[in-house]
Length: 220
Length: 220
Image 1 (spheres, rainbow over the protein chains, first blue to last red):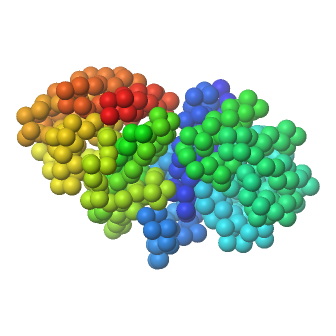
Image 2 (image 1 turned 45 degrees about the horizontal axis):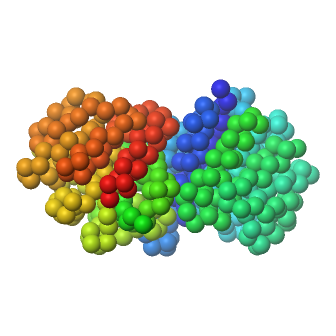
C-alpha cells in the first residue's frame, strides 16, 4: 500500500486549500488504495477572507492547521511531523492558501518567500526521489522550493501567461495543459495539473485530479 | 436541465456541513448535468469547533452562510432567497451543522426545534412534490420538519439505534441501510443515504452519495 502525504493550507479557496481539489485528492487516493496522511503548517494564515463577499475579514485570525483539520475530519498532523521515511509521495492541492500560507506568491509573485518547513519537505522529496504532485497554483510552491537547485522542473499551471512567466523566473519550465491533463516530469518525479486555474466546473477539475493521483500512486 | 438546491450548514463536520459529503454532492450533481444552486441560513452557527482538537472554540463566532460559502466557492445565497418555483429538488448534505444549525437535534434529540426557514422549505417541498435528498444525519431535519404533517416518511440514518429511535419519535419510519445504499420513499419523494453515519472511508461515502444524487435527479 502506497503512503501519500497530503499537504493542506487552510480550508477555502480564497485563504486556504481549495476545498473541492483537496476532497477530490482524498477521494482518488482512497480509491487507488493509498494510505492517506494529512499535514498542514501550524501557524496563522496570512489572513481570513469572507468567502460570501470575497473581502478580507479585518481583525480575524485563523490557524492553518486548525482550519485544514476541517477538510481532514480531524485526522491531521503539523507539517513539522512529516517524515519522508514513512511516505512514498506528497501532494499539494491548490487554492490561494498555497500561495498565501505555504509561500508568499499571492503577494510577492516571482519574488516570493517560502515557508521553511514547506521548502524543506519539497527539497527533501526531490533529493530522495519521492514523487511530488501539485495541483492548480501549487506548482509555484514547488518551483520556489527548487529555485536554487538547478533542477528546472517541468510544471503546469494551465495556460495563464503571467503565472507561467513567473514559473520561468522561478527557474521552472512552464508547460501548457488543459484542465483534464497532467504534466509529468519523469526526471524530477513531479506531476502537475491545472484544476481550477483553468476549470469552471467540478467535473472537469475532478478529471485532472483523478489523472494526477493515479500517476502519483503509479510512480510512487 | 434539472435545477437542484444544495442546502449547507457551515463548513466542517463538527460544527457545519460535512465537507466530503457536500463536495461529493456537488460533484455528482454536476456530473448528472444538474444546475446547482447553493443556499445556507444567514445566521450565527450554534458554536465553533476546533477540528484539530475536537473541542469548542470558546468565544469564537462564525456565520453559517459565510462559512458555507467556502464549500460553494462564493456561489451561494441566503436560504431566505430559496424559491421552489425555480428548483426541481433540494439536497441536504450531513455533518453536525445539520443537527446544530438547521435544527437543534445535536443538543435536544427528539425534542429538537427547527430553524423556521428550513422547516418552511421542507414543508413547501413536500406540499409541491419536489424531491428532497438528505444525507447522513440530515434525515432528522426532514423528519422534524414533517413531524406534524401526518406523512410518516421512510428515512435512513444507517443502523444507529438511538438515532433511529429518535426518528420514530419524530414520526418518521427509520429504515436500515448500508453505507452505499439509498432508501427511497416514493410517495413522499424523499431519498436518504447514511454516508458518514456509517462509513469510515470517503470511497464508501461517495458510492452512497452518487446513488442518492442519481436518484434525486431521476425523480426530479
